[in-house]
Length: 105
Image 1 (cartoon, helix red, strand yellow):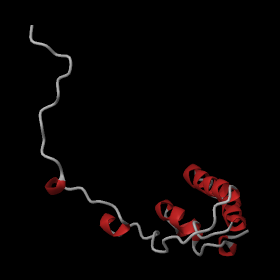
Image 2 (cartoon, one colour; image 1 turned 45 degrees about the horizontal axis):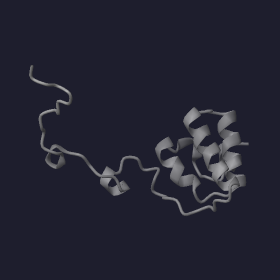
Image 3 (tube, one colour; image 1 turned 60 degrees about the vertical axis):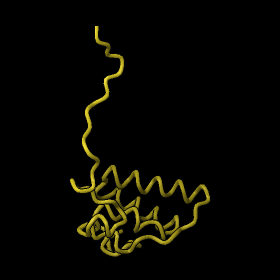
Image 4 (cartoon, one colour; image 1 turned 45 degrees about the vertical axis):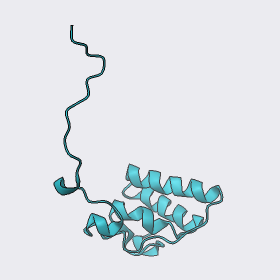
């Protein structure tokens, strides 16, 4: 099997960060094909675990669902991916640490 025969175009060039969203709409047979290909080629532990976990979900009755076709673009700002950007302007004010169990003697 070559990378061109896979259910995800350009699978070999997809970043791991976006792969989870890209496999969500795939049926079990397609996920198995990706897993077999991954094991025979790059065999990345994180990707093998992700594909195996998705297969378990599908085997347990989960249905393929819509994924995020833009998820492979990891250069998007965090806020555009639904995250919450952290900055000094949005962080909590510093406070002194609590001292539990310390008594003046």
